[in-house]
Length: 462
Ligand code: ADP
Image 1 (cartoon, rainbow, N blue to C red):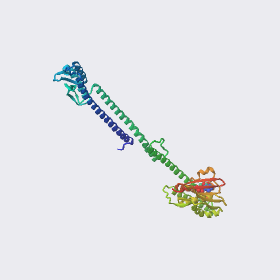
Image 2 (cartoon, helix red, strand yellow):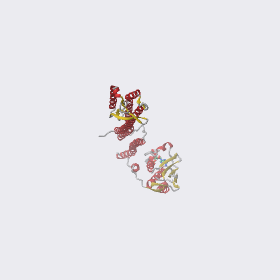
Image 3 (cartoon, helix red, strand yellow):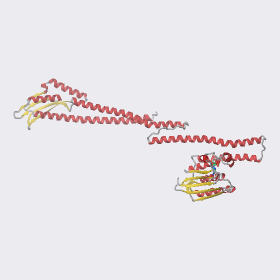
Image 4 (cartoon, rainbow, N blue to C red):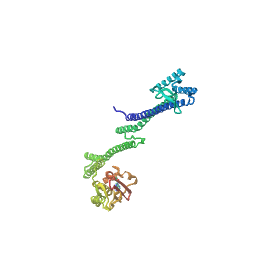
């Protein structure tokens, strides 16, 4: 059977606290009682010694007589304190006897003491001890003292020990009650974010990505867990909207050329249009565009796939720039655009093929959006932490308000014109994905009519 974390925590904390409270209470109770008993035994011995001394003082060694009145007073005081005396003279003559004096009082006092001790659950019995009474080194007589041994409580002692036990019990009960409250609260504090996490994780698994933890617990591990769950929800929600947007974008991108081709073909089949080579070629161009769109999408999917494996080596961005420029030189010549590479070697740990692809994408954009007789310059340099490749053209530029969107897939600054230039709006998205998978950054600066400058920054070591 599964038990809730809160119940288990509550139970464990409670058990620990209760065991501790019981142990502490029992130990202090035992210790105090033991000390008190020892104190009482000492007290009883001292009392006997003081009775014997007091009696000794009542002997007159000159006359050999006793102060009978004082013997009586001492005897009565002792009796009220629970000590029953029998006082003998030197030759064994009985001088004073509590039982003879007041038999019923003795019986009453003895009865009270044994009742009290029974009440206190202390075992013991009346014992009689005989002590010699001496005066100035000479034996003057003897006294036999009967009392409840090994110790007994007077009324006051008994009240004191009862109050003390009561206080100990109250402290124990209070601590136990506190343990229950503290244990439950503590368990709740730990268990709440965990059960909330379980709830939120279930909600996420059911597709409710908007859900978030509102409060953050002040325990480090719990806070990390809450943050992780919030990030997970955020990432999944972004993935979800990306997926939805991608599907609708792809549908949109495919629909336009497909319906153009389809209506052209339909017109030709129905004989409304004559199938001239130009018309067929236009259809073929649209189909080619579709082909390159699908190829670009495939490439993008490969890169964005989390499993993209980069085969990193130490590469020189300067050399990569030269390779990319060489590959596109003929296109530049067609448009009479000058392509040049400047700067210094710039090394980074990167996947050579993919960085060449980034450079080629940036260069072919520059070629596409730079008019005849333009100029394209690739510059490379190194800073302390980064290696930089910059592609600069003096082409048409990008309006400032569009700059934030050009790295998004299918985004084109002017759709109708770009359809003619053959762009699919994916080139920069691919470049950005590759650069970011290397832990780098890609930025752009541009002025309409003056040109654009794309900068790729790669960390030197990853
Ligand atoms: P495309 O295949 O349309 O070129 P990209 O993702 O490569 O797609 O670029 C997105 C858009 O950014 C382009 O359609 C274009 O409008 C703009 N752009 C990219 N590079 C440049 C550039 N060097 N000069 C001017 N505009 C550019």
